Image 1: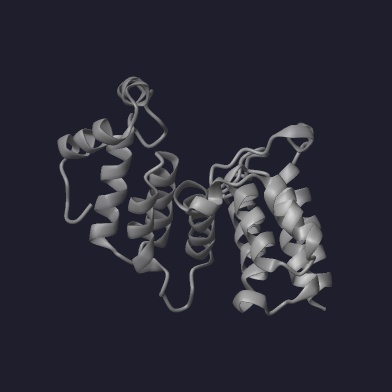
Image 2: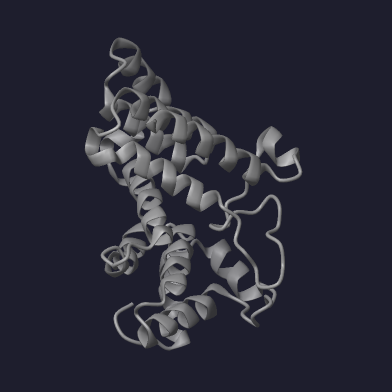
Length: 227
């Protein structure tokens, strides 16, 4: 995505990287509220917005998310990188960064192929094995088990707040940001949908507003762990 790309080139890029079924679905996708009908149009729009204004943090975060959804993690990291050194820091971009680290660990790091049981065994042998706890956390994040990931991170915070340059606290803040519903213009956030497009599943999904309850709960727990 260096320089402006016409829609045809982005379509070719998607055809090369997406499974055939996904490419067909993209062509058949209905028009959304912004009048965009397929991934190529969405990526082209976001890319153009970034070209016009590199400080458009919303466009950078959304483009990063779209690329993550397509499984294009390295491309997502490339798009995200220029936004990570902004002053003041952009919480949304930092949250995307930690989410991406978890996904890349599971997909690209040989250690990421190990299951939760492996990390649980190491943790049982040494409660202060923080690298094992972080590896388990990243696996939980990648599979969308947000409460379990938050619980594991809180265990690190309670034992050593400063470990890994406060990696546990930063990841908790990142997860809560990803789960925070967006504030639509003139509308209340929709229950069951997060700012990152993440759907909550299981018992929490049956509740009226699972995000608000989950976020409030873990913000309180983090505050207590830090004090």
